Image 1 (cartoon, protein in one colour):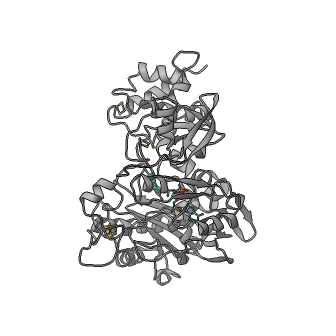
Image 2 (cartoon, chains in turn purple, red; image 1 turned 120 degrees about the horizontal axis):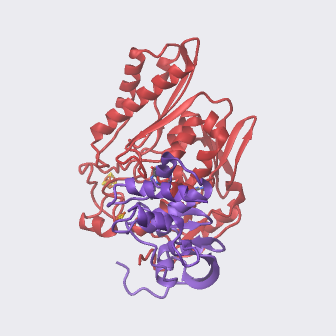
Image 3 (cartoon, rainbow over the protein chains, first blue to last red; image 1 turned 180 degrees about the vertical axis):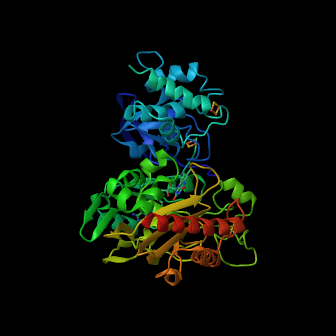
Length: 163
Length: 326
Ligand SMILES: Cc1cc2nc3c(=O)[nH]c(=O)nc-3n(C[C@H](O)[C@H](O)[C@H](O)COP(=O)(O)OP(=O)(O)OC[C@H]3O[C@@H](n4cnc5c(N)ncnc54)[C@H](O)[C@@H]3O)c2cc1C
Ligand code: SF4
Ligand code: FES
Ligand code: FES
C-alpha cells in the first residue's frame, strides 16, 4: 500500500556475518531477514509467517536464536549473526545438519533452517539436553510436516554424536 | 520483502532524559525496546512511526537489584533474564512463571519488562494484516467507524494480554515513570485504564524506568490458558499471592490478565482473609472472578469460556498455594 516511495535513508551497517565482518548501506527500516536474504544472499533464512510467530527466520544473534523477521537490521550493529549457512563445518554438514537428514527431521524443509539454528543455540549451552529441554528450546518453531517427533529425535542424535 | 515505513530513522539515546527529549522533538515517534510487539504492529500497519527511539543503550533501564526494601527490576531487563534469575524464581515465583510462559525463547531473549507492561491491547479484528483489516472496513481502534465486537457501542474492548502485569500486581508492585519534568512512582495498577484504545495512563513523553516489588513477598504462582501450549498470548491469565498462618488466610491478592482491556487486582478477596480455604471459599473466589472479568469476543475462543477458565485458574492456584502453606 506504499506506492512511489522515495529512496529511504540509509546507514552504514557493520556486523559479523557467519564469522566475517562486513559493511553495507542499509535502510533504517530494513528487517534483518530481508537484509540477510536480499543483500547478503543467505536464502537459507526463511519467511514463514506474518511476523514473529513461526521461527522459520531464526538466526543466531550473539549466540541466541532470535526471529530475524521482527529484528531491525541496523539494530544489529557490531553484533555477530550466524545463519544456517554459517553452521557448515569446513564445507561439510554439521552434526545437527547430518542428524536432521539421517533421522528424517526434515520433510518439506521449510522450517528446518530455523529448527537447526534453535537447536544449535541449545547444544552450545546444553550439550546433553533432556527431551524436555529440546522441546522447550524449539517451542518457538513451528513445523507443519513432521509432527515434531523426528525433529526431537534428530536433536537427540546430534547431541549423542558429540565427541 | 516487507516495507515497514517509507522512511524511518532510529534514534539511540544514552540516557532517560535524552530519550524523553527525542520523543518530544519527534511527534508520532515511538519508544522501542525489544521490538517484539512494536515491529509486528509496524509490519501490520498498526503503527507507522517515522522515528523510533531505541531504549536498548540506556543503563538506567538495566539490571535487577535486590535491597532491604525489595527488588528493583529495570524496564529494559529481558524476559529471559527475569525468568532465569534465581532469587526471582524462589521468592517472586509468579513473576518468573509468568515470564517463562511469554511467547517463545527467541522473543524472551529480545522482549523486555517495559515492553511487556506497555504492550498494546489485542483483538481478532485488530491484530491482522493491513489488507485483512481494510477488507473488513477497519474498526474503531484504528481508522474504522464501528467496533465489530460490540457494534452498537462506541467503546473498544480489545484485551490487555501481557503476562507479567497480573503477577506484579498480585505482589504489590510499583512503577517508576520518568517524564520531562520529574519522575513519579505509583502503584502498577494506576498505569492502566479500562479502554482498549487508550489503556495506558502514560503521557506520550513518559517512559517506564523500573518496577519495584516489596521485600518478604508471600508465596505466589501464575497460570494461563491459551490456544496453543507454546508461543501464545493468554486467553485468560491469573496470578495469586497468598499468605496463610495457623490454617487461615492472612493475605490474598489475585491479579488477572487477558480478559479486560487492563490487567487488574480482583476486588473483594478481603472476605476470605481470616478463614481457611475450603469449598465455600473456593466457590466465593470463583464467583468474584466471574463477576469482575469482562471478556468480549476479541479472541477465537468464546468469551464465556474465558470467563469460566479465569475462575477455574484462580480456584486451582488458591487451593494449591494454601495447601502448600499447611
Ligand atoms: C508470536 C508472539 C507471541 C507473543 N506471546 C506473548 C505472550 O504469550 N505473552 C505476552 O505477554 N506477550 C507476548 N508477546 C508480545 C511480546 O513479545 C512481549 O510482550 C514482550 O515483552 C514485549 O516487549 P518488547 O521489549 O519486545 O516490546 P516493544 O515491542 O519494544 O514495545 C512494546 C510497546 O511498549 C512500549 N515501550 C517499551 N518499553 C517502554 C518503556 N520503558 N516505557 C514506555 N513504553 C515502552 C513501546 O513503545 C511499544 O509501544 C508475543 C509476541 C509475539 C510476536
Ligand atoms: S474491540 Fe472492537 S474496536 Fe476494539 S479492536 Fe476489537 S473490533 Fe476493534
Ligand atoms: S518468519 Fe519470522 S517468525 Fe515467522
Ligand atoms: S519439514 Fe515442512 S515445515 Fe517442518
